[in-house]
Image 1: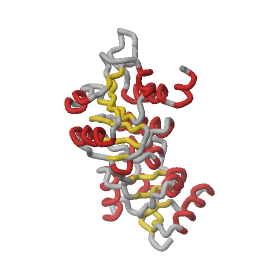
Image 2: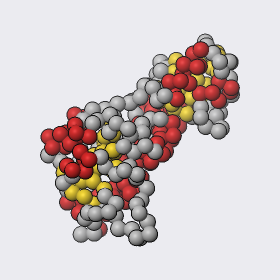
Image 3: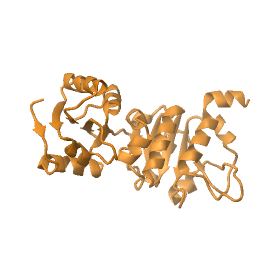
Image 4: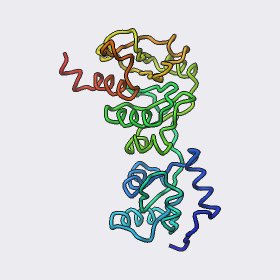
Length: 261
């Protein structure tokens, strides 16, 4: 390493911390996240590394160096400023925020459409579930938490690196796109609709999930071809958005569908 920064007030560290905080850069904390990103084809701009590395960290750092990534040796105080974790990892990388397009989702059997979900932990958990059950991508309307913000990204357990994400799609544009693809637009409704099994015969399918507080926005709700409701106890008004998505995707999984025929 040819560069070392010890002070957390260094201007470069301040700029990096600001980019991480505002979601302008993807924060990869630890060797596992760094390797996952490289394997997903995401090349960080820089890796900040402690001088005290465990073998697994050293191996990941060596891989980053061979990929031509800049490596900066920093103090533990610097890593603590860059990370919002209570216990700082020995490595932290900053990478460009991944992005995809609606055109790239063409041909997908199943796409999730997240409408106004503001809880980053929910968004991250949904990305993880989307990968687990084979969704081809996730579309986000404005106001939905970024899956690349630190809390959401950790909740996704790396799935945000592998599932195509299309951000900031207006709900009206999302409806036009669904119609152009010939997909069925279905949405989760806490109060009315058919049982989740009704989704199994639909392909291609765009499954819209709204926020717990407000549900789907009017343009999406009015455009739904099918509403589905998960039966729950009358004492429970609605399910957490991530939990509801997991239940619906489990219903859609090929193995589950085959067993219920």
